[in-house]
Image (cartoon, rainbow, N blue to C red):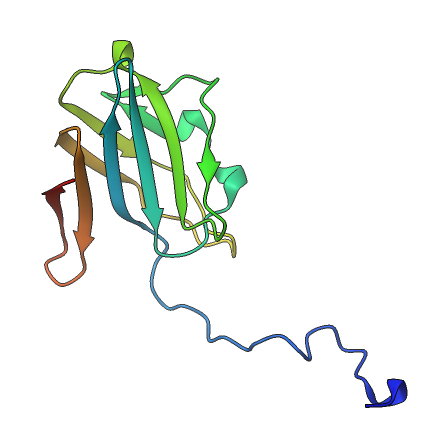
Length: 136
């Protein structure tokens, strides 16, 4: 194709995707355990805005996690992982997540899960509208 026929429209080669009608939400939560830490992985139904994930938005046993907490993300930002010291938690604990938003600006409704166990994966069932647990 001659150069003069190439469109200057930057979006001409991008896929058109319909907007998602569902709310932005956490759809899965995995808790792994090592000697001194719990590693918590959050799975989202859409790409999360990495700037919205802050320690002040995640509470374990009703206390915000440490401000020094580092958050890691997978390539498409549908998963975030962080660690917390076992000193800050117990073997059973609760988590509350607030004020997160998707990459395209949708705000997540706060969630709270109680009596969480380590070495467990929790998945939100859209059919039953409840969280279900399974062993890793």
